[in-house]
Length: 269
Length: 243
Image (cartoon, rainbow over all chains, first blue to last red; front, side):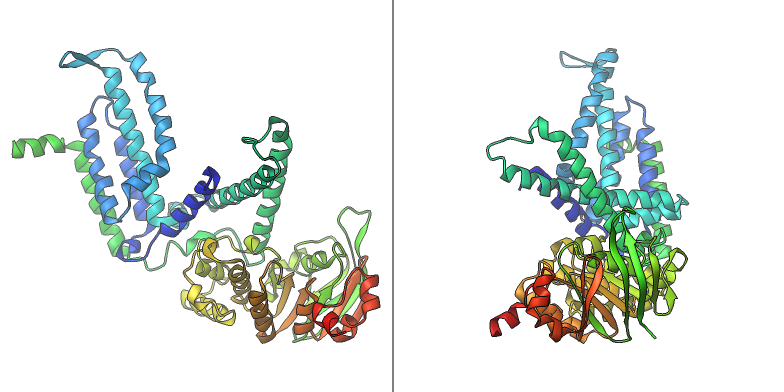
């Protein structure tokens, strides 16, 4: 399987794994979105040198991952490119912040090293949170949550259709690439002279396919919201959703305010 | 009474060359009509005009007594179901259930009614066991049946099919023919698969150069080798073997 096929398979996998049935799926996507946004806001609010406090926020991801039966390793595989990008960005801190914070043996630990690490951890946590949200609710559920928070339906539709369009685009790229490669044996990638027509044709083909899909939606009474509204209301328990959101709000607040690891250390130390 | 009435229909994409020219016909309630013709003769264009995906035509189209124009699109689309040639264009949600439920939900039916319609539609195409299957895991034949179910769940009075048997293997094709025969209501089937037309349609319209060349009994036209050849078609395989 080439990288393109892997990407398409991954999107399909996310679709099929997301929003599985069971008690967990009875929580309203809006409650999940609220908790995830709160988690992200609290995570990024940590001071750049407060690594221990930041690490304690990982408990949320750990508990969510276990409760939702989500694989951390699979998740890591899926988001590895974004993490690589975050690591690259964080490296700049090494050059801008050279204050020595403490010494570890004979090694000077600078502020840049710690802030690079905290930036990376913040990146890992926020990307994991977004990934978990998508896995918990599915794209339709996430859009339902956005809709229930008052995001204009036009905006929510764009989010959903962009996600769906991405799959169409990847499939068209795959078809065209296969057709090209079968007639260009031994050639790696696409020759630069063919790029113009390849990209142009790709856009035309995906636009045409996108139009067909949109026509099919119109013919079935699509008026701008039916795509996600049901996903946000089926088998939902309002009580469970409120308890879920309230409990996590308290827990995340506590993790942000109290040095949980130090308290635990002093208890067992 | 569900019927289609087309009067002096003329349509052009570019305003220069007419794809359909002064076309008139009427299809009555419960009729199953085949629409045949060589490539580029305007079969798909005609279907898209009937359902209002194309507009700016001359002449008139009446679907179940409603004039098809920009103002009546919502009403017309409740009456007419259109099955696309390419199932991938029709199916865009994650599971079979979600896709089949898409239409009824848009029309504001209750959860129970949606569930009922979905199961009935899947039952009609014998796909009940696939309700929770991911779309991408379906075979080509299953996708075609699922895309028909997406239309049936809206319970349209009129059904339009654009090349329904394209890319189907013999077994799936046979199943499709069986399902088409079982379906009630007015059906207009545009197809190059003349055997399918012979099997499912009592009446056939042959178009060439944007005009109707023949409109009558299916067996009469599909046994007329000369007429078929003149219009870029050939005898159906089942008939050519027996002659």
